[in-house]
Image (cartoon, rainbow, N blue to C red):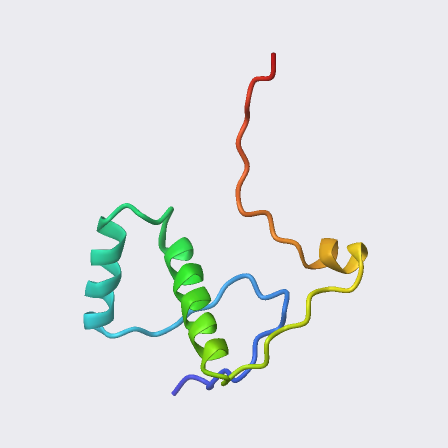
Amino acid sequence: MPKLITKLERDTEKIHPSVTPGTVDRINELLATEDFKGLSDLIRRAIDCLYQEYESKGKLKPKKPPENAEERIKNAVLVGSKEIDVE
């Protein structure tokens, strides 16, 4: 039996969850909507929604915003990029 993971290191880039065939069917239905850039995008957005739900129910403590610009930059995540022409 695989080891139960109770916490991830912050620099973890890949995880390998086990899912049931029914969950695979749901994932495929969601991906078929083409609202997601791929499986990773779908999972990130699902986790964001679940996190917000837990936070609103008081199951998680709301995070304090970073106090300084250096801390904000350290925690920043590039959501996307796009090339544009400037005239």
